[in-house]
Picture 1 (cartoon, helix red, strand yellow):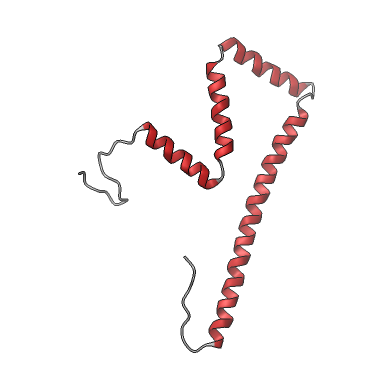
Picture 2: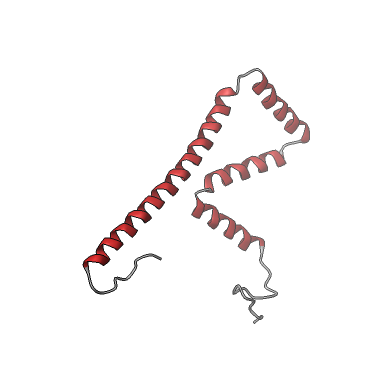
Length: 123
């Protein structure tokens, strides 16, 4: 067994690619980013497996589609999805802050009603 450093990990412990992949996927699932990461990985693998000439022709056709406005709908769809994701995160933070404020108010009024110290359910 190796010595442990201050963060609880063993010194000299080698992390394999499978463990790193597992950690990245677990983090992505916990943060709600599994679908975007999966789509990005699939697109990167597809681009990597294509011949170089095909990759450049696909890139030029995408740029050409943006220039002649035939891909504007897709670009707006992506922009709308990103904006919706940002708005949902902001609303979750606002809701969480408001729920915390209401909980603190409730605790304050409950504490006024009793003589003994009330415990906290905050984690």
